Image (cartoon, rainbow, N blue to C red; front, side, top):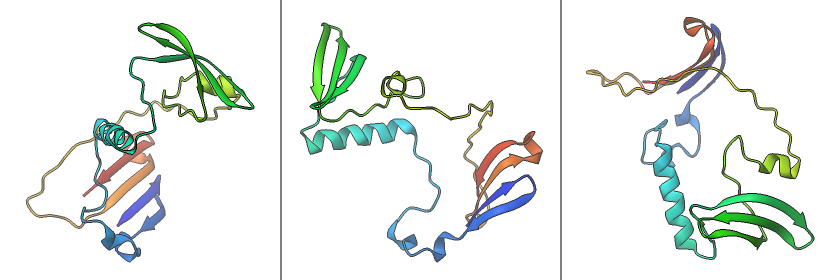
Length: 148
């Protein structure tokens, strides 16, 4: 079960048990996995698939597109060189220069929320339910997310 609130108003709720894919997972709902685990799993899978090149300690310093694909200028510990690619995946984050290079507009709003994620052990387990407040009145109208 999950509920989303805006202030004191419940704006959305759902029951995972009512969804057709609920029994497909052996894990209970709302398990958070640390980002570094996900990144590790992705890297392992990329190596398994092959035909993809991961370059560590490299930095793209220039980018342009033409009829043949993308032309990247790459700085490496050994120096700078150019690289042609059919596809480019940018995972450099919100300050990546790729947005400017490709003319992508950014409409994201930066919040000043602080998050505390904690594991809590109960003597008697409550029902599994996740509550998310978009504007929590008890937290200066900042977002809060929690599971039981």
